[in-house]
Image (tube, rainbow, N blue to C red; front, side, top):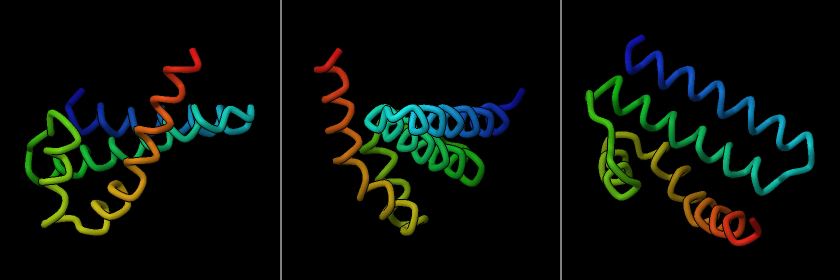
Length: 93
């Protein structure tokens, strides 16, 4: 399988996981999987168009901002919530 196909499969898997978690009332975990879905959509777009996969969120945002401002705005809006939720999940476990 190629990188695009792998990323596409990950998007579907993360989204399905998020939906299941949400239905079970596990909203923090569901949010993290929805956020991971968005991040993977961004990576899919970057790989498809630029053949680059960012190493971290900072690089991802740097690549997205000038080329895909709408995707950048959505991701940057939810990023603080995603990192806060992830920290909460790690603390609760």
